[in-house]
Image (cartoon, each protein chain N blue to C red):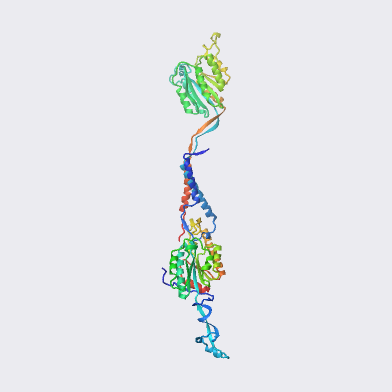
Length: 281
Length: 328
């Protein structure tokens, strides 16, 4: 299992949730909270505990005022996991499982609901609707550790919308994003309502530390296509450039949705995520 | 140039040559997304080249197993030469010297001289076909018309052994003429008659010979090895009463040959030098274009095919040696 040290990270959102459930995030609702939002007549907000004497005395008409606070609300945190065959490469599966575990713990610690959904085609898809229950995600995470499904492609993106919560949620999208433009657009369209944090999982062996010279026969896990490549420094350089371009392209695409993507390394490190949220939100 | 196979059934297995186009025997590594690799002409070229080499190697091995060969064939060739039948007199007198004595010490008999010069003659003429007939009382077919020079030389050598008494010219000529029955007419044909005496030819044989010579279009060279003191071909009789075939057979045989419709030339050789001159003379005359067929034996090609397969396999082995894996 995952090491005990530092498995939780801190996340933040920039929007105001409308959830009724008290939680950690500043919401639009007024209610029991710490964040002062204004004064209201005692008649409107009949809560004598919050009676503000200072404000009441200042009023020449002798109205009694109570302080109104913003309630802190809980949000659903969804983890969307790509389990297409390309995630089989390297230890992406281990990363995904560790990340899922950390997210579940963090959500529980923050007081949010945690749900999980895999981008799979059909029957082997895992789906955990958002829940506040502690440890509910454990079974699903164990499934994730077993590695990617046999599914070759992404599932139908339209199914996403129906399986995600109706209210705005914080969605972690964990994938290597080795998708075609159409797939990427489809998934992003399905997630338009939500706050999406793309987590790009690339194994660095995909583009670095390649053999200097020689013949390589490579197979694509999703299409099964094979390619014979004559490896040489120039080709490695071109591959690195292709990855850099892809990185820039993905960043552009996600920025349009409002979030900078997180390019995670091969090993999961919770502090990297905390850092990412502190910088971007 | 047609290639045939000993075991053509095996060629069915040539279908296997398509295998490399399905899979190459390289260890396959997995990469997350092949689309990320930029298109690379050199890699594609090497890929196709390897597949072609592997295909060819398999095809060549199968072809080798089927044992290809170029079948035996006859090649028609044109050369200058003739079909020559050497007709040798084996009568007893041929074993004497030109002086009419039995050879003593270093002396050569007429037959030995003839053998020596004829052997050289045969050896020099590359494109001629030679046949050998010897005759005395009865004719002997020694070697049929063939391009086997060694057989002809051996036959000439064998003719130097001791002969019999009688000289039956007509029978010898009949046999020589019979050699031409089955050969093609394109070559020039010649009979070289070598004798030291002559014999009377009776009327019926004479007519027969005349007809045969005309039919086969054979020119005749008579080398008369004249013994010193004996009557020659061109000698006129001293007295009219001696002017008959019984008394002067040489003169009458010569006259009969002259009456043939085909070319005829007589040489009177009184010593080895004159004989050599006569033979080289014949060599000059008989040089018409000659069409002949040469048989080439069947040639096994499997060695070449296997060598080709080996070269292709070396390419494959080299590619295996250059194989690398993606370390994950």
